[in-house]
Length: 289
Image 1 (tube, helix red, strand yellow):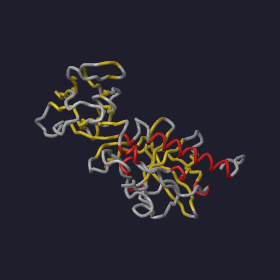
Image 2 (tube, helix red, strand yellow):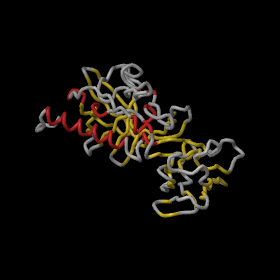
Image 3 (tube, rainbow, N blue to C red):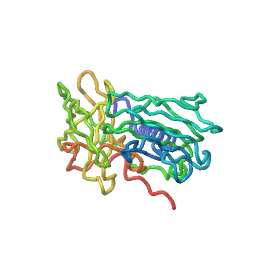
Image 4 (cartoon, rainbow, N blue to C red):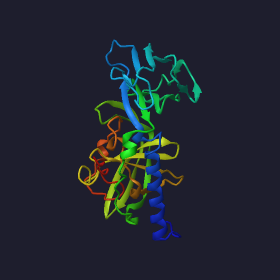
């Protein structure tokens, strides 16, 4: 805690952060809204993918707000285009559209298209993961949102908010990251943080989410027991003097802890800790039947 911060104030700050995270999870753009992941190279010879709510659709939309047949997506020479059937209401980036191209950076093996194609309350997004193109669907009225029981957290404990020393790698070190489905992609480790926790010295390697933002994926002795088995995430801010505050009360679950249509990175081997860090997110609560 900061010197002028009371325990009650700090606890309320963490609880407010957790509530905002819940709101993001349940939003139409959140991870609970993800309702499908369709790879655009399966089978290899296929170029057209039918959009609709019927069972024969490759890109399956919600039957509550979408017609049985809404249109199609076409893939040719790495270009992804779409055509909407007559009589079907659809928008591209908020504007009525009958067809067009979904743009994506061709140079990045990991990329998200800035375009959003909307049919009913399902949105269609083009992504690239591990060099492969895919469609990610988000349903604003997903049953996962409706039935989500909330998250389970350890009690807030100021002892798990620590100051660490960030040591950069110059240059950043390439690393092959594996996701929960076994695919790999190249990323970079920008450095590591070292700190003391409960009398033990701990080191965690870091990726980068922005010029001053560190992203840490780790496992610890609680993983697969009290916490999600694949690991947890933690964000931190770099400072000019190399000091980094790591607040493990704000560790959170990856999206694959809630949703099978997601592609979460697994922690680097160096971030498999033998110590327990009983702080932050526990395993997700089970939904009611």
